[in-house]
Length: 299
Image (spheres, rainbow, N blue to C red):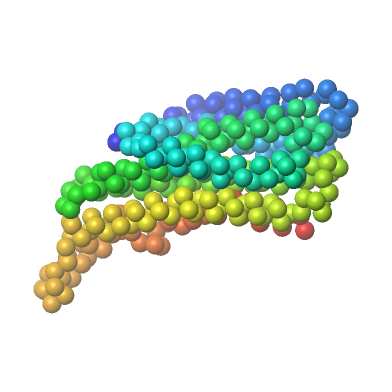
C-alpha cells in the first residue's frame, strides 16, 4: 500500500480558497435577479447559511486529497458487491431529501434565484466527491481485511498493513462525520432562513426535524463503521494469538509473554480506551451533535 503524502500548506490554502470562491459563485449567482432575492440575501439567516456552505466548500479539497489518495490505494480490492452496497447507501442518503422535497418544498419556494439548482449542486458535489468515495473506501477496507488477512500465521508485515487499515478507517469516518456534521448545521441554517422568509412556518418545519436529520445520519455512520470496526478487532486478535501465543498460566515465562502480548495489543490499538477510538466515536456523533447544537441555539 502506498502511503499518501500530504501537500504543503500553501497548496492546501490555495485549493481551499479556490473551492470556497467557487462555492460563493454558486451561492451568489444571479442573486439580484428579483426584488425578493435581493431582500433575502440581506437577512442574517441567509448570511449564516451562506458562510456554513462556504466553509463546506473550502473543506472539499482539504478532505478530498487524502480521500482520493485512499481510493487509488484500495481500488485493487474492488468487488462487484460494492456496487450494490453503494447504490443502497445512495438511496438511504437520499431518503431525507426526498421527504423534504415533497413535504417541505423549501428549495422550490425559497426567494433566492435558482435556489433548487444551487442546493442540488451543493449537496451533489459533497456527496459524489466526498461522501460516496469515503463510504466506498470503508467497504474496500473490509475487502482488504478479507483478502490480506485470511492466513492462519501472521508476520510483521501484517502488523504494518493492519495499522494502515485502522488509520484509514478512522480517517474515512472523520471525513464523513465532518461533512455530514456541517450538512446538519447547514440544514438548520436553511430552516431558519426559510422560516424568516415566510416559505414555511416553525410549526410546519419544527426544529425536531433537524435533530432527527442528524440522528438519522449518525445511524447511517454507525451501520457503515461498526461491521468494519468489528472485523478489524477480530483480525487484530488473530494477529495477537498468532504472533504472541500465551503459554500455560503456570509457566515461568507467562508474565514475560503476557507483557509482550499486551504491548502488541496496544500497538494494534485493540484497547477500547484508545484515543483513536474516541475520535472515531465523536466523528460518528458529529451529525447528531450538529442537530443538538442547532436545537439549543433555537431556544
